[in-house]
Image 1 (cartoon, rainbow over the protein chains, first blue to last red):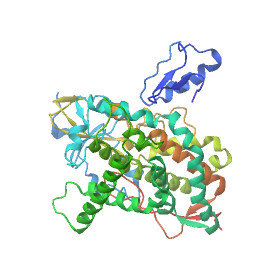
Image 2: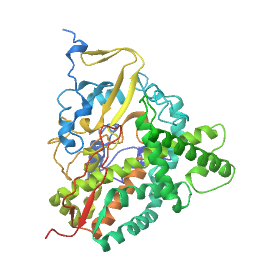
Image 3: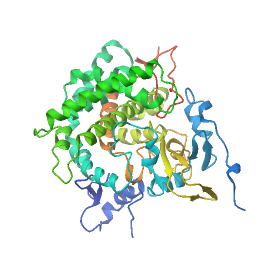
Image 4: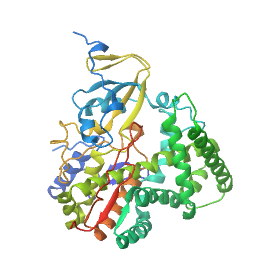
Length: 46
Length: 397
């Protein structure tokens, strides 16, 4: 889900790519990732 | 006004209609966030389950598994942080998505070999012919063991699982004795295997775990415990999920048509099937101190079990929670648990299931439950799954 926004580290934990700033074209994908995070660990700031 | 223990609803789980009407069974539990059951409390709302699973210092997994009196340390489930965090850090890299993904081609080949004869024959008993053997083969592949040990492992696994299901019973019957004998055989086999593999480089997960450098190196006892846990947690869970998933797809031809016509929908369909049918729906914890759950006070030492299948039907999070809907915009189900003990093998399990659903539906778009047969959930039991699922291939005449 949203491979241009999120990746995973050696431990398998999700990480945000870069500094976490995404353009309008990826905003929806970033929100979908946050909405489906099972741990509710992702916060999207506008 | 403070509520007392007496005010909690009591549910007898043993008499739930789980065998043939599991949705109804879970529905009886979804009216109250905290329920009294035979062995303690049941947390059923998403909020309460989250509270329990995300506070391991108050809700101990170690204390909950102590009663099993396992002869080997069940690494890492029977531990709390900080020991659990150490095990987790050592083990997690072997199960991360980037390590699991390359297994895909090999798993696909194995699945196709299992499905092809069924296409020819036109019918199957899905649980024993596919759902049980595939995860066992994956385990053998992962551990660098020959696939012809498959049936031996299935026998060992069933014996050990029956043994843990019988834990707590006071009388030891013949079956339990047989189970202990089989468990001892498995224990011996693993002990010898570990001695052979330690210090020898290898690509398989077992060799890699054995060759972890100090201070992270694990003892023989810890590795045996880990192998036992893999067998207990990694084989029947996938088997049961696949059985449940295929049952729902067989019973809902319209939903099935969606994934046959658009295989890209399979990952979302798989998540929805996982949401409705967690194969390990009861996650036990024991309180380490007196603690508050809403208006209710739980004494120290209380056993509280998170009911994942009920939390996954919490309508504050899942609108129309009993519907099978492959187009949910959010599906934060907790079938793999949550918090520090969240399933270590989730990426592997997902890959196994996705590959199976894809290859199956590409070859067998039409199937139904064989007339005159009824799939039953074995119940009561700590994990749930179908005893059998007889499928007939082809469009109904």
